[in-house]
Image 1 (tube, rainbow, N blue to C red):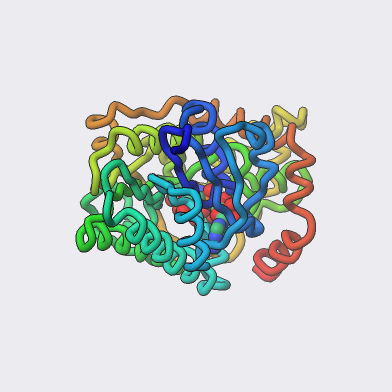
Image 2: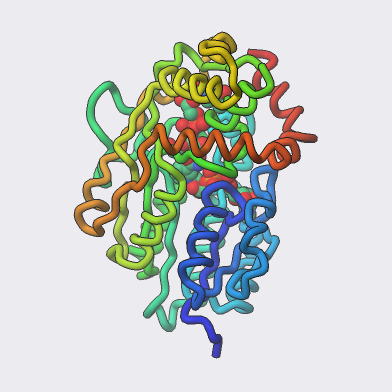
Length: 354
Ligand code: NAD
Ligand code: DAU
């Protein structure tokens, strides 16, 4: 008999959102055992978890979710009663240059986990839960008005979002066909510490600091709905414990920004923090070739989560962005380490030819 009340497999726990979620759960639930299963791709970094790695309710296992046999073995060994599944290839631009990694990890990897859970829980589904962490991008692209609801039809338009949509469908299919206990959440764009600097906010902080051009895709008019990563973690906590089995919840903070407005705000904060004359960082803005198939607008309606479970975001955006900038400026060692080696090659491939 385990001394822990629950044993949770968290996949992708060394990544951006996964590391925040693990920190949140390890600290809040000392009676839960959290097993971080991560392949440690370029996006996974155990340094994201150094503050909690020695806690007695935390363990790391290096493993690839595409390895079906290994997933079954881990279920045998740890007797997981829950999975919180975050492991994924997550960057849209990389899915345009190399879709296959997305298909293996996001679709085949999810199917392997579903099979392992189905096999191990079939005789006793009571108290079990497969929680799938997904994205608002599965709903496609909005025009100037409207919001994504849980009932919005799926219309993914990049290899990344198509692979995530596919994994959502599989999770629901295992619930309907095999009675697997599942929950799904679809969240908007996250920002905060420990995000790999290929995504807009950390990339632009890094470039401003180093006086490098800020590559704005197209006209910078695309709109994203930004949520502080810890608020995503608190929403997952709420849904994990109190959400209804088989249901989907949208997570978002009603916080829409055009890319160019966000970038200008970021430039202003960076000028202040770096003691540069106002307007200095904006001069780095450089309009480049648009992302292929670039979705115009994402905007989440999270009324269901707010009304049914009482969740709400805790942080106002400008304050969150200031905190985030502060963290990156104080964490130059982390940033230097993750941007050395393979990152340089990626950067040249992605941007030098634009
Ligand atoms: P990330 O790229 O920062 O981290 C992904 C993690 O998964 C890394 O630690 C990586 O090593 C691991 N991983 C990748 N392939 C693996 C494999 N085959 N086996 C085991 N581990 C593997 O991603 P993120 O931004 O933290 O996103 C986490 C999840 O949340 C993803 O499922 C993503 O689709 C979803 N999501 C992200 C956002 C966002 O704004 N970042 C918003 C909504 C939903
Ligand atoms: O909406 C949730 C999704 O948000 C998650 O599912 C994804 O995993 C996550 O990566 C994010 O996807 P986006 O494509 O919206 O994020 P990204 O940071 O790559 O880009 C944000 C916006 O900024 C988008 O409109 C493209 C633009 N952009 C991005 C980069 C990297 C630029 O203009 N220049 C850039 O160099």
